Length: 438
Image (cartoon, rainbow, N blue to C red; front, side, top):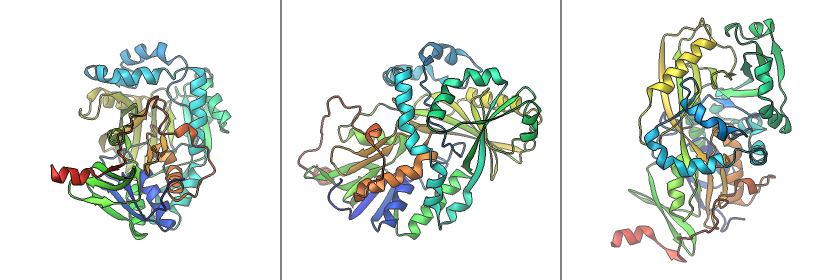
């Protein structure tokens, strides 16, 4: 149990995890300040740019058996949605080796077992989070279908479906002419749908996060637009969060800054193998002849979601770090795959986007207290941030208040990467005062 009792909690990060944690804490009567360099729902945040799917069934990590053998071909194939800026490879290599070490049956099953508890009840968790708020208007129940060219392609994907079945998810198969009845605008080359019932999506993720932030503000949350630079400690526990312009006293910190959390964790002596997975989407305005429901197109590895402002197509992956701008090739491939999947598709305009998914080397988020410091990790959700955000936020609030959720957090232990932990926190330390006196 985290000590002392919460008096003022600073949440670092205004994405889906941070805002969810803030709402659950506020509902428990805890004073909360949210700090982020970007406004909630900003286009620069990972929570803004995603397919919007509340993918309860998404328990399978990318690192499946056989990935090591297939990776070179994937990277060299211009029609495969995986890209690498080769100049970034030397920096990526240490993380990549750890990542690929999980591409075996035992680790894949272990990771899937870890993901399932925070995704399986996604719709229920989002409904609970948004109850009584304006954010609820963006939450939409729907089917979520995986599109295959034929049954052989579906059966070739049985390892992944086995993992989903183990988590309690089995699809309803639709084949032949029935596919066109279900989704009239799909290419005739796509002849099988694996339909997941009882799923849902967010019709505008940016507006959803902004609405949740307003709900938090209505409950009493304070917002500070700033970059966090450090923490202050007393007797080994966090006592303040330091920004460029001010210092915020606190009893606890929730670290939910996505891929930017890694640098802050290093200040605590915690080295997390965390990489940015550069994700792309294109939102097509005034779409005609697109899908009626959210679809995962397995032939292009992208998701097409009908949203408030158009059709959003998302799913291309690139490794290239935080600093480089967007690349042309991933967007060109996405446009081509959209056209192949929906031959009669047309639109008035398009808006491309690039963002950064926080990818730990074992594909599991970090959820839990860091070395009894009062700093609670809540980051590293890879592809499941929007799906698992509300439940993660509830778990984080429970850790802070000592009102534990009925879930085993061992798989998400933020200390799991440390074979030898170098604690950089003296018994007493006040970084801010030290800097002022320097």
